[in-house]
Length: 295
Image (spheres, rainbow, N blue to C red):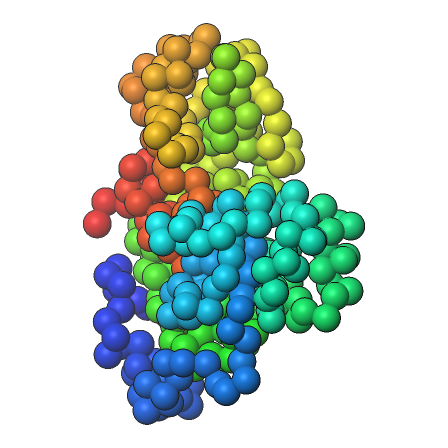
């Protein structure tokens, strides 16, 4: 693993990396716009995909996004094709796109099959809950947009961000137990198990998932909450909604270390779980809040 500073690398540092991989600052500067004939009416499906398009400076080529594309804020002002798993093919094609970028897992399958069978180029962006997965997303999006040098520069920056976070978290002397809640309502909890995005970020932040005994996301009751005995409870916020008080009111919460010490951490779920260009920074902030990063 390459040693990196905890701070995000400067533009100069990124350009130095580009030189090492055979790209000059001149090639980076020349890549500020897409090549002639590159797609100019793009529909982006998937929050992390849209974030990457913006990070590559290609947002002016977007004609629509999906409902998970909430970062940056300007993305939500674009026409919307609906939730990524509930797409209507005719609605997407009605926008007259010349490229569709869609995160792996978009659906429903019949709608995606129609989009793939249409005359519009369709690029599926692979989903993987890891630093390597984020870099692969950037590669695929950069290639589809015709801006590979910009993609290489962004990958250098994001890779350094992940490595700096991993290096700092590795110094932690404890590995706190974390319970991740996707939602809390009417006393019902939807929690994250293993092989999930939340499980991956808990590990990357230096914690351990106290509900790793099951896969994916499942409802849990008060008995399971108490038995899990989390040191921290991490929950997703939604626009205008902070679940902290609902969590404090959960039956049995006062019997857990998290409840006794009021260790309830709220996070922006899209940035943290989306595994996009800003996820490393979100993981670093989570690590700071669960006590595994003190620098």
